[in-house]
Image (cartoon, rainbow, N blue to C red; front, side, top):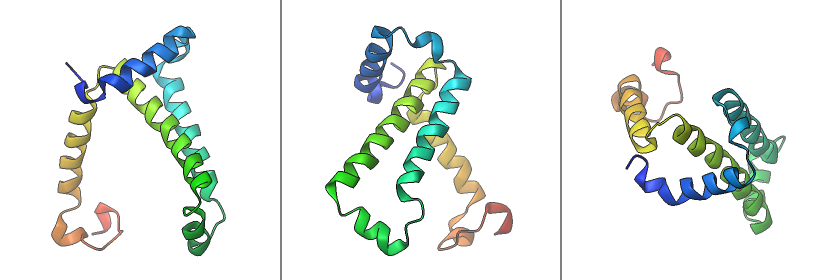
Length: 119
């Protein structure tokens, strides 16, 4: 079964979505937009905070709960989009990591944050 490792999550997402008749709204364009919006909501939690402020921020369990909620939204939309398009999540991640390992070979990229074309 495709996405077998995510089957419980996929089933929960589908149940939630289908009980509300939302599949009609979950086309690839809108799912991609939703991912971007939810990612921005995660970024907003850290906006304008210094490194020290962030270190303190993430020590608070209420803040971690907010971060967790935003990550839950992001992963839910990403997993559903992949499922709707028939993309195997594990396969997609592993293939992308393989491509990235060629763009960012350890001997050139280790300890550096430069983009692959600047290594």
